[in-house]
Length: 399
Ligand code: PLP
Image (cartoon, rainbow, N blue to C red; front, side, top):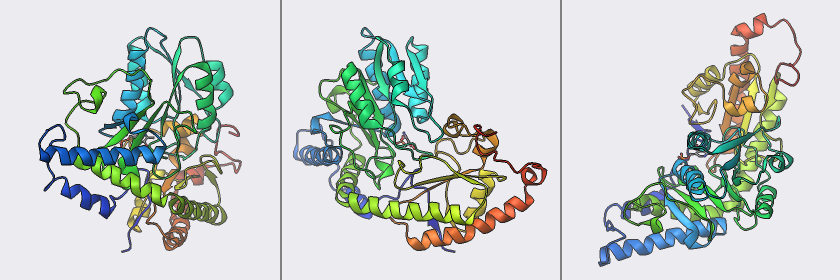
């Protein structure tokens, strides 16, 4: 059976060129970059190249790039690092209710340490309002953290405007760009960003490696302490193969950016249009235009997302019913609920996240099997049979 991977927001396959280079740094070039001898020096040089490639991907300087074990660690470092270093200045942080748990749970931890956090609401498209941010700012606000693109519904936030506001008010601005970096053009200067998180495995690099970009001059405490690597901001012997792989993936991403964007956007729009044309009782989740190039997210009335997933899997299609990190839990997605969806509708959601390897044929196949599966599931659904009314129950605004 043909197998189609539609879960690129969860992770992407490592580019073979990336994997080949990584292998070299696991076998022949195995030195510790802190060693002064030739084995160490050749690895140090390769790490410098990786740093240059990552910096070039986001318009940063090389000394503003700090390698971490992934997006989760970079988010933790950004929030805790800023909070603890700037405690005397203030104790207030602004974020949104639709962030990844790496942000939300770090905020909850900081609340226990005496910090105050404002979790801003979003509208029905998962968009945060600049006015709400303005209103939330106090003289104690030290950090605003708003994600670039949402991992579940793909909505792209007004990052440039938020950055500008933060700059005017003298507040640090962090963005979790895990779902955007490598797949969407980012320039930290154009966007007025002070701190930015990215993760290698979302753009054809290896898992377990990421970056926190920290603008020069930003005051940040380190979270872990050790041997002084990464200029003491993130000590610990570097994950050399991972970092080398990330650097290569960043270089490829920069080269491929225009074609990657165009390809994924075309496939995304074809799939969205196809689903809207062929399937009734649906709701597109996320912003209709300001959305990540590969993201498609729908709620299908009368069905359970999990049943839909299993049935798609039987047909060879791998998708997701929520974020990678929350799937496995039966709680409805906090993002969909924050957008005003009812529990029932949130449960019937499906995320399809496209990648550079997907083709038009993949989309055609999906548009062939998805309506059949839905028809079958809906025919069996007790939600369908017992639902007396035909009015829209797709969101809490009309229900
Ligand atoms: N932030 C966002 C928006 C994500 O989507 C993810 C992972 O899915 C993370 C952070 C965590 O990144 P990592 O898997 O590298 O720890």
